[in-house]
Image (cartoon, rainbow, N blue to C red; front, side, top):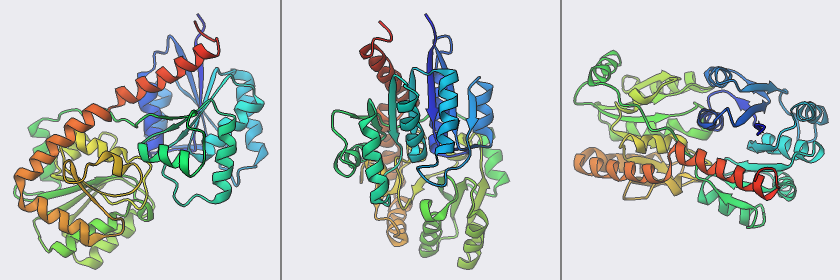
Length: 375
């Protein structure tokens, strides 16, 4: 039997959640059965390198200046005509645009779109385009229940086309006590320090790591440390902000880490105060590390975290509420442990990479059978 040819379309490949999921999916594929190529606007960094080491070809078409930049679609169509994919799968708005136009004019048998965000600020024009795109799609994946609701109620996509596939993350590797000891020592984290952690691209208008800094300032506890794993355009500004608050000795930014598991294992509480979030992969990662999670009640985060059970949900843009919930967890180690265990159980049941990849493959096989492409 010939290989099933898959073509994924996304925006930038750098260090974000969408491309991390593509990498996770690629790792799960049986390349004796499947072939995978990825079209993107731009590709840089370690995720690109890992995908290419797996044998995934990455084709860059350049950034979009608008949804009707036909020169970009011509490049996509050139790839489709040479590759002749059985399935085209687009994620992120640019990816959905490329998959829809490419799938329609390239006569790709199966078109799948995936909404990877909770786009509360998306314009009416973009929502209209997404509704039009869905007409030509076989299925539209929502990566969290709140995203599925958004697709049905806000974008007005037919319920018969929308399918829920919760995002998933890899089960973490356990690091040795010696490794953890050396990292803590190198970061000057004392035995009696309590570490609030977060992971993500440092784009503060989205991730709001500055709200954690403000919460720590409000708590006025020098034994409280904020460990931030991630890089991004606001990295230096965030360090300056910690200086302005006078808590620079409590802020520990370590930049991007290709393998962040050991850093999660230093944390006592995980916090993700995003302004908006489609899913929040790192919250699920924190839960798999048995950490209670304080997160904002936005997008997929409100589906992942059960308020009062696996952590706490707070309104966005509310450092005072983050401080209030942190104080509860700081003062009650038994509650931290209990919430962490319940978080782990929930993540193992709902948010593992194996489950996500299997559900996506099951959808592929279902549609391939319905189209008569496999028996």
